[in-house]
Length: 427
Image (cartoon, rainbow, N blue to C red; front, side, top):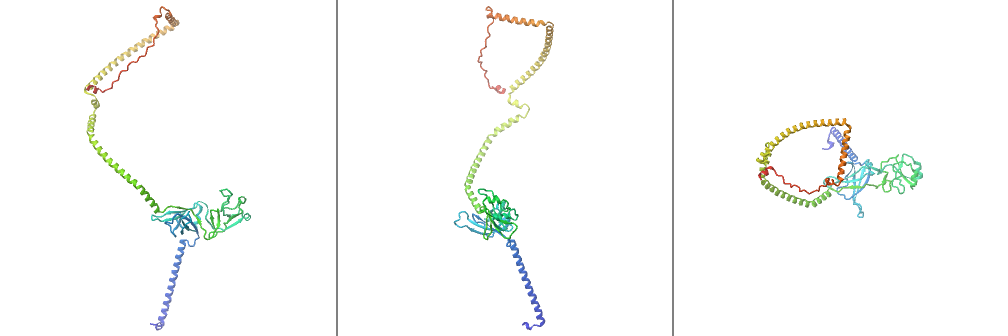
């Protein structure tokens, strides 16, 4: 049915419906475009499309486990990605693979000239590897964002002591290793710089900060250079072999050691065989030793009573003789004790008498002082008389000269082995 055949009321309602559908389509398309734009914005923020990226590169022995687009991490955090992996020219004998990567802002501020490395480590058991950079510990930032200018000595006199203008290079004296002045420090010792032979120096204006890199550190010139497109900073790599190579070397080591393991198992088998034979021989020895053990057990069981050891060592005759001897010895000791008591009592009486005699003698000596002197004179005169008689020819034979007794070797009594009384009685 044609539109002209409709009534005016129906045509009015149809026009309103068409306008509503049109507006709905427009709103839907707008929402779709807005969602797509929001998605693009979030993706750009997440991947750092709007951030400044600093380029770096390193060299590796092999590209195994690495691919373009892999993340670059710093302390476990993703800060960039690998952009280029290419082999070096055949004439380059020092490097194999060229790996270029970029680090987003502000994380390239952690990369300094000393202490920062590119570690290529294993990731997972399927041969994958990852690229991780380390935080710098010393040196200078690899990139700067302040304007660089070359100043002559005459121009540098006007900025001496300024806090905005700082050095952008190391000042080294001829033949010296320690710099006179370092980058990022204010210019103060201009005379020492002139004496070192410098006529121009690179300066940096810290009062102005730009969004893009303005300078890159040149380790060969010990100075910052004005950054140009295509410049990249080189990081030394610390590379670990892939897991596949490690497994291959492990398998080779196992194959090398495996024959020794087989020899060891053979030796163990021989040891086990000898142990089995030894245990069988020990069983025979144990069976043969059972009678001796039984006799020893019976002998030890007889000792479990008072005096059993004496009955076991001595014969009945020896025991009787020993009992008689001990009885006689007891009587002898009793008599000796009685006699000793009597002897001691008599000795006590004799000592009392001797004490009386000495006391009387002491009284006599005290009463007659010349008595002791007379006795001493008599002894001296008697000795002189005897000595004179020894020299007189008539009485000389009565006093023969003393002779030294000769030492004679007397035979030692032969020692006989000591035997037990029980053995003597059995003889």
